[in-house]
Image (cartoon, rainbow over all chains, first blue to last red; front, top):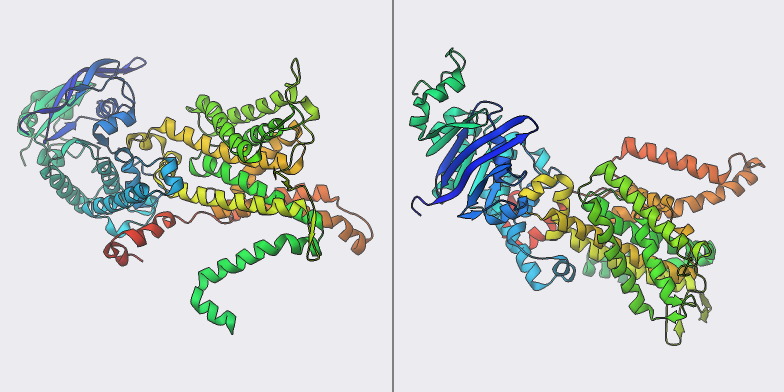
Length: 266
Length: 368
């Protein structure tokens, strides 16, 4: 695979009324890496995610995925192109079972329409069996086999987070974008998540990770970028970022009491 | 003895199905015999409303799009049949062509009326669909001028019954001491259509499309992020739901022989919606139960008048008042006790069944 770039952002900008949520942000995510995106609250991380996944169009700049521009594509077309995401505030299909949630994720890679379903054709049945097998396999990968038949809202918080990942994986993405996957997880669950993400990455999945848990990001990512007030203030390996004076300032201000983690090498 | 051995042979479920078949077959004759012909007509309408409720269930129950103008598609189907099989234009096209045409046309109307509402949700969608429903009715009411198409408020009369060559469902025949009237024939036609649409509904529910509808109902943004083309999938729901209504409309026109815009008011839309909600949104059996209950129960209340006469020698509560009273009471009780309907969808069930057959048992065996 080499150092081929998978997702490139050129000078992205987005504003909501007078608020500049993102300003001239450029990124380059390489195939096969784990790329972290950190920044204080309100720095524009989720906005950047929403631009990448087409929830809103950028006001300025261009996104390239596999050298193809993403501008003007709708959310579902971007998913088909190969970018899947999870949500910071979990958005599962809560009245559907865990299995059905993942089966919905298989939608963009399958094709049975109304007629196939009505006549219950051989190809529709074969595809349905394929979807089911795939959904079961993905639940197993994410450690949710036991929960397959439970409704999504009945799952524990950690399971819901992993179900979001399983559902996103069902769309067969090349880039998996995770919006704060460790938010609200306890230590054990975070460790399990880390293992899962490393496992996915080892199988060749490129990951884009927004995270507040700086320790997790530092431990996982190959490279990372730091946003603050809508601007990219640093980019590089965790080690470089950790020593970057802008980052230290953004996170700690002048009084290094609140959150010493980024400065003190652990 | 014979029954017992059969019971062994067939198994519990199949025996139940067999009994249900016999009951459904004998029902109109029994009703005719013991309660009078009016009751056969009542269950005919119950079946017709089941068809409508099944259609609306696709839009409201599966896709979660609150549609308050659903009766418009019923009207489209009815007028399609009424105009093409009556002296209105002197056309007498065969029913086997006109009924599917009506369903198709209603489906098309579903797309046309659905397209502008795609970005709306909840209350806003309800108001706009309500408006569309009224527009269709008012159109039908006024399309008699300058060119008379629908005959306005007077409606279309002398609509052909379902007929094929010399066989017509409008004849009454006597056969072995049993009188078989049109209401009986139509009972079987409606029963067949309802069964057929039940199969269609449940197949759609368990398919990729059905899951996509439900995903949109649950969370539209997340659904789009899972690669669902929400616009097309919503339009499919509108079209499928509307085509059920169109078919029911055609049958209604053939059965009644007369249609007018009066039959397609907002109250009817709301009635169908109540059937879906009362029975259990998103669950085909529940929806049919809701339709049957809401069409049969008001009729039973008609007996309340005479009953009061015999018991109390005076009618204290007018039956029609009683109907609205009980209806309101039933809604409140339902909201408190069974907010998901009388017979709600059992979740996971739709994927349980196929998974037992197709999936290697290891994963399912642990669960259970």
